[in-house]
Image: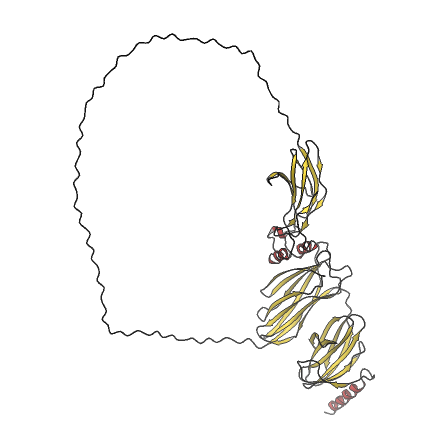
Length: 495
């Protein structure tokens, strides 16, 4: 009992002279959060790695204020030293906008600015020790933060997924795979945040069975070159329990290689359960009409088939007539045939020679990551001849002299088209050209509908047009190729 009293006296003295003997202001103010109704004590959090001591209860909270001149990745930890306190930490900006929340600890990455950490009881009350330290991360990673960390069934929390320590060269695309307990929470409202630049391209697969995939790529050369929020989504509590929520990530630097980064997840606690609807059956009584009339039996009609009287048909009697033909006498003819003289041919028929037009050869090179077909078309758009280009894109075909439309096509790419006139025996070389990947639906436009097909077909091999890099799997690397040519239209002029 005596030792407990000594500890309390020590803690009170420490509050007056913390941190480590240096004085700091402490004064009361009205609470800045509209959700709380408690007296808030403003404190100053000026030093890194220092030990601060405070006290909170259901009616007294403490607000630790600090400023950053440069961005910082930091962690704030609160450890109870007396009482039954379970501390809840909330990070706000200078305008009292909530940025992050945690029980016992809070980790965040914030730019230069003014902030404050509010400490309040999640439950209980008592004294605590607070420390703030810089988190030094040398490796890129992804973190998943859920706010708030506890809610009732039917309520919704916000999940923020961030990329940390993005290298200077940046990422051209990223594939986030997020998982949660589908029996406890439901995910919805998935939104990308623009980390990959203006007009970033995204594809979503799911949610279903407790997971979903979000692929994001920078369009037209844009990249993610800074750390920050990549996407957010909402989770709604369904039943009581604790659900782990974590998003892993694979990133690409534009080299057709995916690299998995370290990940840190979060935990959401759900209290209670959704109300069960009660259905009360309604008994429907059908009244039987009461009548005093005598039922009338319906007579069964008797149908008497008409009796037909057969009519006897008379048998015709054929009389055979005997006619004797008259024979005319046979006349006698004595004819002397006339003999025509045999004509004598003295002229030789003339033979006209037909000239054969020499065919013309057309060569060139078309680049794409898929097989390319090059064809010549007549004026009525009928195919005159075609050939599949070699693996290196080179091709050669021949056709008679004339004017044609030349086209180069590949599945999932914008085609190239031009007009060409062939002269007999004169070879033609077309300029080298590169087809643009991304026109999956073959409508001569690369847009979000093409990206939607990638999302719907994620981690499959069909439709083949969506497998833009031709590696037999549709994923973020195909989205990356599409994003390079986002909003381009075709066909490409080939002259």
